[in-house]
Length: 134
Image (cartoon, rainbow, N blue to C red; front, side, top):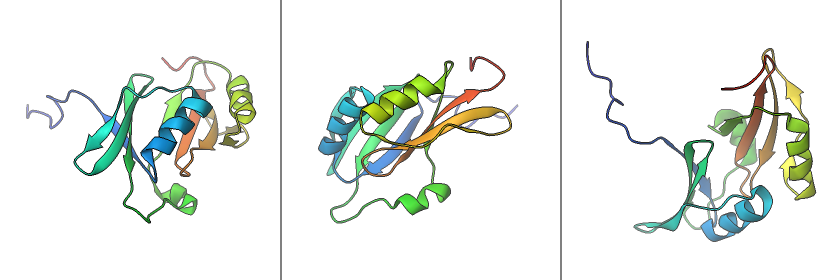
């Protein structure tokens, strides 16, 4: 059997692009209650790194003058966090903290909601309708 490309992998990280890493760190702390595990730079690129549900999400600063466009979210990658519990209380927490959050929706097998960070990066909280995620 041929070795897999990722057999020696140590970590997977999703990268989100933001206009200002410092402003995003403050937003993620105040709105989502997340503390970065690392804030720094990779050369000239400011970054912040978070651990979310056993995965890593990294914020990378866009070049000056560039911004993400929310209309691109249906064509871009976004972060999905599969939850075990009811989404309604989490939605209310996000609303109370002033987060841009949508209604709880249903697909064939999941209920989910979307919210957006300071730079319009989409996050999805999803819960399987058949029971626990794990």
